Length: 386
Image (cartoon, rainbow, N blue to C red; front, top):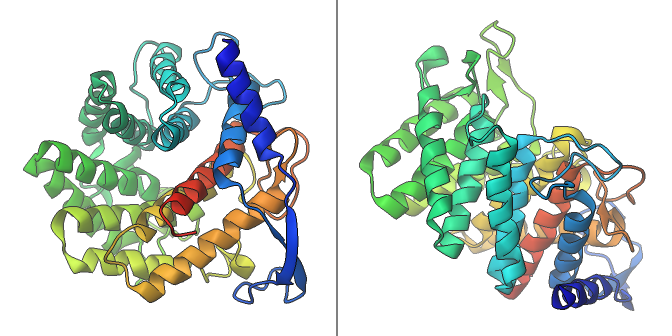
């Protein structure tokens, strides 16, 4: 235990390294701070990611160690879907550091999720199960532990029961509302199906991914911009909910790029780039070039999900250089703003509004969004993109 304590202490201190070095003109691409002289900082992405990981674990772990609590202010409620994203950020850290402490946390969370969820991974919400399936499959590929693959397969078998012909196709959002279809229940399923196909080469998985994507693009994508809407028939009226949430853009990008990866059909890559290029300049999604605040609760997690899949697109070798440069500049600006403005030190808490310091109670969802973003920045820095 002493070694882990010392490690954690070093990481927290690393995240608090004095930032100011020299001054220069701010990049003019994004107008949030105008063109006034601004401080250049030493962006310690990896060290800050480690500090956030340590603070998140210490401040949100439940008393029994099975799950992560709703917030850091005393609400011990268990919510299923943020556990999946917590598993994802532990996997990010394990891949980056190869430190077994993260591997231990990953396995404890997988088992704890099942135990806290009544001894099963199955849930009423198809999108919730998809998040856990995605995180479990990533954890399997990172560790080779078959327990993760077993969980992913169990979830996938249940997720596929949500496919039906209501609204012309797609996977339902939840089992008690089979006529409501939305992006959160379809785009992550496509990502998972493609990744499972890559692993197991089951043609049925790829066929389903293509079918879901065809339905989703025809039904929920604005053909003039490439921006994806939220869902259809949510109010039992057959109408499309045209809300533009950040995480829907991210998962649509992820669905398109994963289909491109397994098919090499350039149309999918073009869709991913069209959406990403529209997202980074959309005044509703990215006002002033900075991803909007979507509050706490579920919305607190949304930005981190977009960051995860935009970072995935950046890494594709077939993205055009001009587009990649634009995506890198956008993501870097957002990560830098979060780093300098949206992280509370020394507590290492994350604000839902990345240009404003956090205050009061911070939900797990909001915190994990920030951890995801710092992990993405550390990964892109290591890859020579930042």
